[in-house]
Length: 88
Image (cartoon, rainbow, N blue to C red; front, side, top):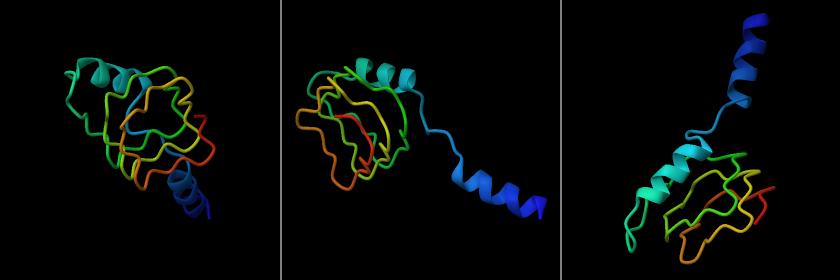
């Protein structure tokens, strides 16, 4: 029983694929006019407020509960992204 509970918990409790700092560094390093690829990445629950996403591709990424307030999402590809409970 304990192993079954551990298996269930490990599938429901997980960390994002990247930290907010990692995302910030990647976006800061991206050249103007490039399109940083964050497609399919789990960014759930991260504080990404105020970031300039520089037309990034976030298609099919998990942004559940992420804080995107004041973020520049101009021309950002969010097709198929999970945005439930996120703040935009």
